[in-house]
Amino acid sequence: MSSPKITSTGSSYGVQSLPKIDYGRGSYLYDVTGKRYLDGSGGPAVYCLGHAHPEVTEAVKQQLDRIAHAYRYLFTSDAVEELTEIITQNTGGHFPNIIYVSSGSEAVESCLKIALQYHTARGEKSRRRFIARERSWHGNTLGALSVSHFKTRRDAFEGSLLDVAFVSAANAYRPPEGVTAEGLVAYLAKELEDKILEIGPDKVAAFIFEPVVGAAGGVVPAPEGYAKAIRAVCDEYGVLLIGDEVMCGSGRTGTWRALEHDGVVPDIMSVAKGLAAGYQPLGAALYSDKVHETLMAAHGGAMTGHTFTGHTAACAAGVAVQKIVTRDRLLERVLDRGAVLQQELRAALADVGELGDVRGRGFFIGLELVSDPQTKEPFPAYASLHAAIGRRAFDAGLICYPCTGNVGGTAGDTVILAPPYNASEEELGEIVTTLSRVIRESVAEARRTVALR
Image 1 (spheres, helix red, strand yellow):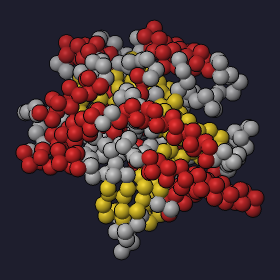
Image 2 (tube, rainbow, N blue to C red):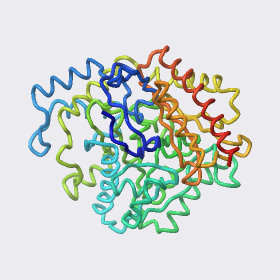
Image 3 (tube, rainbow, N blue to C red):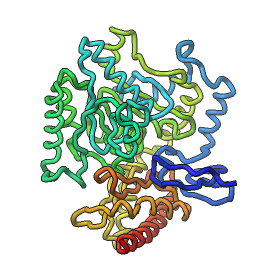
Image 4 (tube, rainbow, N blue to C red):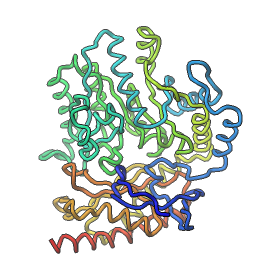
């Protein structure tokens, strides 16, 4: 029996009939017909240990045999306490204060609420506004959607979203018009400062950004020095800095905190996806002692969370995942092998002039395809190159994450790769071979489509 048709709002495959999943083993998934798929993007950059890892599965089973969920206002648990200790250690002791939730969207929502509560606790309730960046994605709850700049995902909800101000994306490949690479960081820092002054420093609660933009931009690391520059601006005006590491954090870029690469510690940060690697739904909002002490003094703690905050089985999955990542030294592998993987992709596609950019950190890599590499003009939106790549790859047994909208909100073609941290050399080689062939075929098709118009 065929599956119902749905429209994907994530990787932009479009309307399709989905195959039915049967099981997963390591980096591969198998549908009920026996077809095998190599998970080259870890779904939406989630499955950092692949599928059906026996140690993680066993840890969840053991927890379920004891108790699935202990309500947070009645009990703590070994799983919650151990995961908190692990996260605190992995973040260098900067974030011992954690609210566990069930998704990245909820993690971001909690971060926004913590920022608002912090300013209220300090007697500055006028600070209600958020500043975010263009071409950003922070989640699907109304608050998280409000600070996101993703046209196709926002349009249906406009009019009910928070009043959020936006500044330019930090994209070295597509800088603001007239801005040089050398002047980009200074321009962006000044733009943020000007926006704070325009709104009024006493009205701005926080600036939120992704250290490495995921779906909205097709993996866009901020330029060197950017994070330190905006940290300084926020400190100057008493604005909290929120780092959204739902997609790029938990080791995806080769350091547990993506911002560790930039030498910056935010006041509040969100994590999710790779935290429990999809074995259970789990996200978290992390906040500094400075924020925690202010909340405690005024309100006795953070006024966010929900019924399943600190879900015991979910935290047990997170503990197991993080222990394996540490024990097997997977972050070192991700950091070193990720740079090589980028080189291999460039080499495999060296004859494809439409490959505009290959970028990223660790096992978080984005490829951008353009019609004209000199002007960086994208293919027309009607050509749907990104979707064609996604469909062809899927048909060939490779899962990648195609996206669009990174140019003008409706155009642009990017493909994200986010393989499991423990993917084998053979599996990484298969990703490069299959994707490069698929891109060549899809670009040729897009050229034909444009020529017929």
